[in-house]
Image (cartoon, rainbow, N blue to C red; front, side):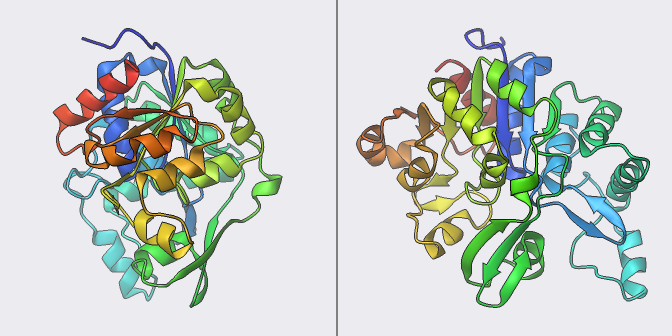
Length: 312
């Protein structure tokens, strides 16, 4: 049965890690009451196409078409076009599947026609039958750049092309000071019964959303209603290089380390039972702490965590 205590939810999300919780929420509540604010710092342009990886991962997951093994792209995808692009000497380090390319062509065409990224996100999710609202954090480009020992790299170059091997020296969100929250973002945060921060990388998935002017302030105003789920379990990230990045930038790769990054706007922090020894130290930061199983290996675990969060 759907959870009853909380009706409307606004969720801040990255890609693969966030989508595990989002599909749980989508299935245990009325999906039309769920608004997802998605990181677009990962966005890039390749082959003349505007690619929004996190928006697409979230949309494909909720549409039930994502590749379950990878957590991104279409299930049963083919890569004929990518091989032909490589034959022309074009970059092929970023995997673009054949059906996935249709999404990027459609998005790019809409933007060329003068539509916004928000318009494109809505068009794509409606075409796939997704009932929840999916909003980009901003309609303006805010690419994430990683300053490394090899120089400045776009986040996708750092993560995909260089496989997170360079040492991280700093992170910047290019042009964020001139960006505005996408239409509906601040209203969703202001109006939701609960704001959920998904278990995404706090530095490069949640960080860019919070850096958009007005978002962090809106979160602070709703602090008691904000629930954040730690993406670090037992000192390790469940997906991606969160732990490595935190350590290289001088933060603790732990649930407590993430809690300290969220302390000014989070009322309740959710940690896995394997980190329960940190409950007291996190509580001293001024947060309520909930100990719940956060490792979502199956659909049942995703739904279970979603229900538990909605009952907090």
